[in-house]
Image 1: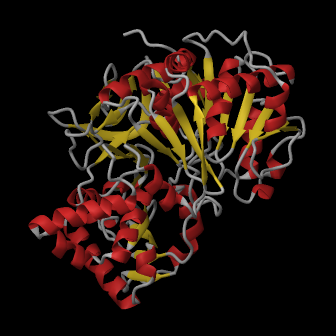
Image 2 (image 1 turned 180 degrees about the horizontal axis):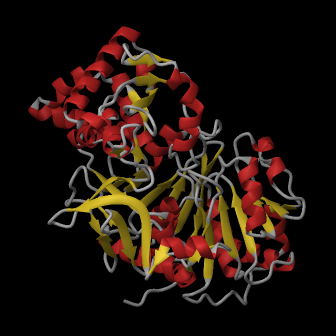
Image 3 (image 1 turned 90 degrees about the vertical axis):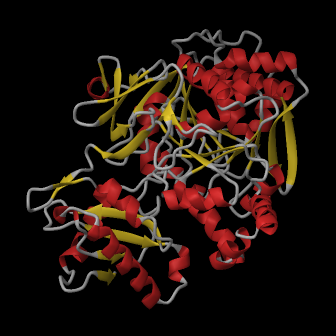
Length: 545
């Protein structure tokens, strides 16, 4: 199958439906539409400005901003000028931002909406030229509005080629420094041209963008899929307006992560307690009406494709959503294959799995259980790191570092990380992911990390959910101890969890316990709680930090 490259796809919509609204941006509670023609005009003006400011084909330009229409327009402008985008996470530390900008030798950075922007200031080297989007942000050398008004649209736009380096996506770095994943125009085109067909997406679809566009999954599932199906993208204005914005947009395709799916559930249960909801859902006619009202209250009453990714989602949570008429499709992919891996298609969902492999994509399980992929969506390698590239890409196969199993129907189940497996002091190996998944089924648990390297038995660090923090300690303790007893009854002796340590401080990106893509940093947590673990009383299974 031959597919159009991203710029060709963009040109298609500009030519065929120039006055159709593509992007919708809320500012001070007013929604501002951007048509395909207007997007083309603004992106070409910015591309012209970038060239005049000294950016030459192949130069790297960073984008540091929360999601907004200008993020997508900046991305297009960078492509039109023949440059390479380097997206940065809005929650990244100044130190990490500095590393990425220097490692990729960025010539310029486009700055937008940011929280606590002043903390990021030290991360931007003096030699990097700054352009400010039309939002309060860091100080800049050039203003978005002035650049667009003073430059004519670029006429001699870059002629995109399949092997063009389109973007360097830096991984969030669960251990060590981020690695720069080099993705080509071919990878973007390959993944999205097939995805929109497989997911049945078209011009009538509406996307809602709020997860970081610097992450491969949001870039693929929202920005690039929109470019390939012609559907519109609406953006969230702020965290405070999220629920209102979602109800206003009522997307047909919605992507989230397990932690937020849990938060949405908790929001429903605060208004409609579980026992009452259960009782209402059991009533034939009223139950359907209540489920519809819950979906409308969430803003998901039109959603046809609901996606969860980035981390495992408890089956109990999937079942809860299915009861209110929302079937969430869990998927799996990596930055290194532009998130194009396995997916539970609507109508073909198997809970507990990440679905079957996507079209024209090969997946297999190595002898040691590692999941391997091969397709044109694979990265060209890690920027300036040939040794790490050779370690991850071997004989044309991407070595994911994740372990899994494929059943007779082709559904893939993730069983853990190759490197996360640890050895206890008894010399026995333990895979943490399945055990963490069982503990996470408790609605008192926000996040969990199993540790046990060098210990007699594994133990679980638990960050309590907001609901648990409002409950009496005795009830939370009793429920968690019951969960522990049931869990240990199903585990091998060497896997049994000796203690539950309920941590005081939430794990966040700011305190270094999580990556910007909301994955726990195991090495950080193990080091942080090592002193508390040493003090645990062997006679008591549950401890509060």
